[in-house]
Image 1 (cartoon, rainbow, N blue to C red):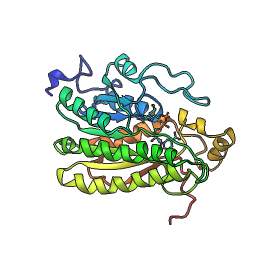
Image 2: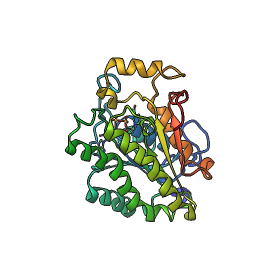
Image 3: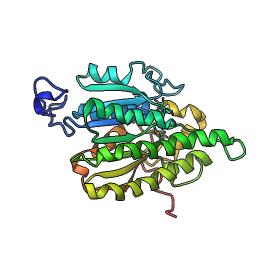
Image 4: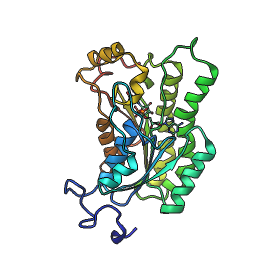
Length: 281
Ligand SMILES: NC(=O)c1ccc[n+]([C@@H]2O[C@H](COP(=O)([O-])OP(=O)(O)OC[C@H]3O[C@@H](n4cnc5c(N)ncnc54)[C@H](O)[C@@H]3O)[C@@H](O)[C@H]2O)c1
């Protein structure tokens, strides 16, 4: 894409809305689960730095939670365009292989390439092995882990052609310890190792693959938790607050940017220090 075709700013294609040089000018980014919470913040943050964002989700309407995101109603693509950016909504269920293939082929048809893939879509329940049905386990792993594998599988041939290819997978602090429930914890541990494996695969083409492991973040996914769970999580956090979606959006921006070009295969823990007191096993 030539500078003349830059979708973001009519005045200066080089500057973002804070007047600073855009770090992702004209890059094509897919963000899954981007209608709500963390994915929404990542989509808005990448857009603010000049990326053209394919906002993908099973549902265009933002999720409103009982604790957080109670007043979020504007679809992410509308928010992006209100702020002067460029985004397109593509409906996709990350447990559906055909849907994922369609997401990738539609992006290629409309934009000709993919530079950044953020595998963020996920669901959470923390029930134990006896309470978790086989179907519920398969469904969670089908979205949280198999969905990441499939999006990576179909996007990778295109990302390999990018000069700054990036895959960013959203895992969790529950990748490293128990307490997230067998389905959720296993799916996120799987994402951490899938990240390392894909990093090796993409490296010869100069691209990077990293995971972000959020602590407890203020999104509607926390409807799963009790008020006591949330209080406990803040008490266990050395920087004592819940994370905000923007804490993860900014971490994703760093990993997507040229500043992180020699960082690959890592899991960046963004948790206010929650894991810091725990032993490494
Ligand atoms: N919020 C936290 O405390 C926290 C902590 C660690 C990790 N995470 C991870 O961050 C990611 C985003 O979670 P969030 O907190 O923003 O949750 P959220 O529930 O606010 O948003 C999740 C988004 O994913 C979408 N989604 C759900 N199932 C989907 C499917 N089958 N196909 C496509 N999209 C689907 C939802 O519609 C929603 O827009 C998840 O992978 C989650 O596991 C969240």
